[in-house]
Every structure is written in C-alpha cells, then in structure tokens.
Length: 233
Image 1 (cartoon, helix red, strand yellow):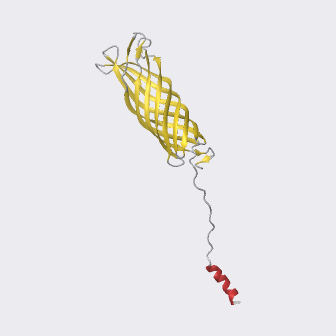
Image 2 (cartoon, rainbow, N blue to C red):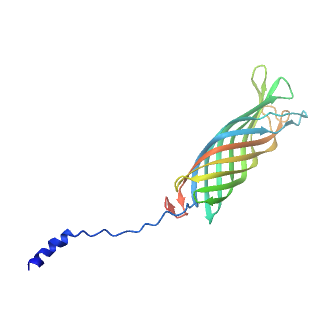
C-alpha cells in the first residue's frame, strides 16, 4: 500500500522528453515567380550623324554621359537550372550631346529623356546565383534642338519617340528567397528616322538616331515563389 501511495509522486518526478520534430533542410533557391524592383547607374549615348534633307547637310554630336534610373517588373520560370522569363522596364535619363550645326552660328543638341523596354530573359541558375541574357523591343524619347551660339536661345526643335531594340547581360544574387540584387549591362539601339521640326516643318526637319549603353545596379522583390503563393517556398 505504501508503494502504491508513493507511485504518483515518483511518476511526477520523472521528466518526459519533448517529441522531436524533424525539420527539412533549406532547399535550393527557386527563381520562378513574379517580381518588381528598381535600378540606377550610368549611361553613355552615341548619336548618329544628323542629316538635314532639305539642305543636304549634316553634323554629328560626339556623345555624352549621364545618370539613368528606373523601375522594372517581370516573371521567371525555372526548369532545372534553365530559366526563361519576361521583363519590362521604364528608365529616366537626361543624356545630352552637342555639336556645331551646319550653320556655324548655331549648336545642334540631342537629348534622350526616357527609355522603355519589353523583352525576354534567358538564364542559367547556380542555386543563389543567376547568369542571364536579355533582349527585345525598346522605345526612346529623343529631343533635338538648334540653339543660337550668340544668345543660347532656342531656334527650333523636335520631340519624338523612336522605336528600336535592346540587348544585354547580367548577374543576379538571391540575398534572401525574396530579395534579389544584381548588376546589368544594356545596349539600346535607337532607330534612325526623320523628325519634323517645330516651328519650321519640312524646311528644318532632321534625320536622327543613335545608341545608348548602360550599366546599372538592380534590386528586385520577388512576390511569388513557385507561382503558388506570396512569400512561400
């Protein structure tokens, strides 16, 4: 009877270990999903030869450099180590280049104000690293001005969007499953076309075009992992 009476107290003194819950190790980075982000960097423009059809004369701005920055959004699909995706972006810049016009009393100035792109991405994943190439359609807002050398005043100008194409390459690193940092080089080709002049249409129209090279740092937030749910692995 004494042993039976002491049994509950003895049982209370015996500690029962908590059950062990197995945790799966973290898997490889899943690059599939939707994302958006921003970029900032440097840009260099290379204007084409200006041609004034009415006068049969030409000039060529030497090119300039400036800052470029913008936003991007896209989606990736991963198949093993292969990645395919799409991306669109919009960048602002104020690239400017000037040269003496065929009329030596004036300055011909070309500016690129913004760059919009839409295209595809093809990459190779190495767990948290992604090496990729990209390319597609580009649209650039190009402004040209003829300025008086004596006064700096505006004589005439054009403002038109130019179609074109872009191609580039870069490397991304997944700092976390949802925060991605990287660097990208992009080359933009601005199609050459005749832009109508204001306020002297036809008489002072000009054929302009060019190229832009950009190197940018990027940060992206991946909204969906594996296309199934927000911030889920």
